[in-house]
Length: 152
Image (cartoon, rainbow, N blue to C red; front, side, top):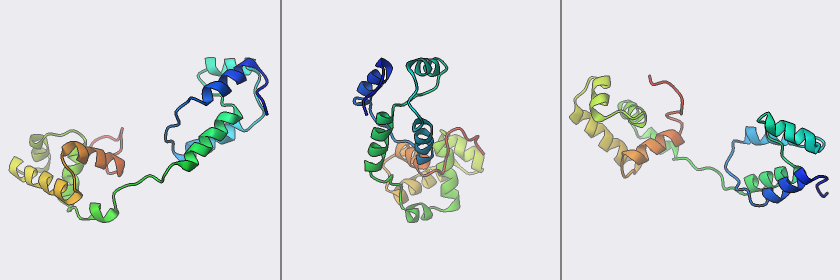
């Protein structure tokens, strides 16, 4: 079905060039539920945009669902890789991911910096990582550290 008004035409044209980014399925379901209702008028579309709300044309929603369905499943490290870490190594990984230096980790865990360096080296070796940056990324991707969670 063709768009009815100029706002919908613009939305449909822009939708063809919009990049589709990964989104959790619960958000996708909510988007589908809110956009599958009857088409809004140009006035309600403008009012919604002014209020900071999103209005998606059904063609945009369909493209979003199709792109989401084509995405390969998200991969995360095998649990066995993470299971290879000791409890202390996991603690070090969490502190490392939160941006703590070796000295800060040592003070928090009441160990020497040399011990922290050993733990960091073990974490990198066991998880097959090249450096601390990759360890931080892995910690966030696996959910060991969640953005916005307070330390501790």
